[in-house]
Image 1 (cartoon, rainbow, N blue to C red):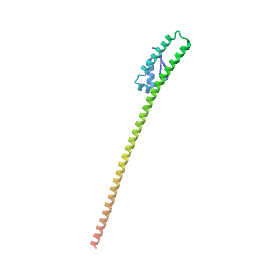
Image 2: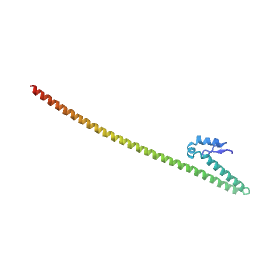
Image 3: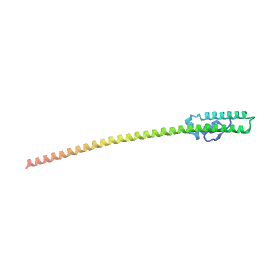
Image 4: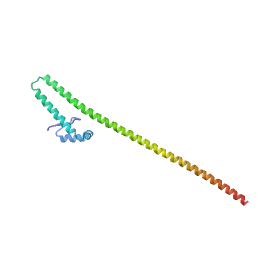
Length: 160
């Protein structure tokens, strides 16, 4: 088939197998996102470009160099537009993924904050219950001291 270029970094590879391995290794995110379809779209784009160039050559056989230059410029502009559109689409996709991850992070943070608030509220309730229990225990001890003091006083008066 001939050499093939990477659509990202324009490195040249002898076979589609090498290009495929390159995409997996160097452009893994795009490769994963496209599900391995990069080679298909690359081959399709390459075939379209070859076909367009072939048509230009056949059509330009008798034309002057000014017409040929104009057609070449049109071809280059079309190719640039295709590349820019492809990268713009990829950029939008990446931005959407980043926004989705940002929203998910905010949602997780909100959930953590709510959980912490709930735990803190429960701990505050437990502390209040513990304070009430301690206060009740202190009152019982005070009452027991008074009862013992009265009993001792009563026993002393009975002995004397």
